[in-house]
Length: 160
Image (tube, rainbow, N blue to C red; front, side, top):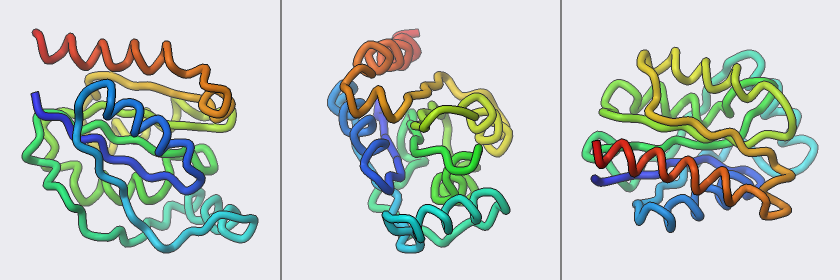
């Protein structure tokens, strides 16, 4: 099974999870690039506002073609109770062409299920697996068991 992990990360939290998952699955890795947001208070406020109002940014062209993969794992942070706008922009752009999808989102404390539901509705089908990881778990390294369980679900899907 060919797997592409596509992620957006402003602070590095989602990047950490995506990189670990790519190692676990032997998957290709693609970072969503978007120059609209920057670390810091001003960038945070812009990200939250645009997430809240649903303003989707332009993202840079991808290095990989997601539709060529058996499974795409899409991940990124939650901003203002929604998946980050670059993740939603990717879903708008590539979602119709993705054969099979899994989702992971990183967050500071809430709205994980809501954000997963929103992405699922955008795609129009149920993802094969989902994972929510708190930022504190990533910083402490305590997300390993959850990541391993998520990867096992993806491997089981391949074996079926």
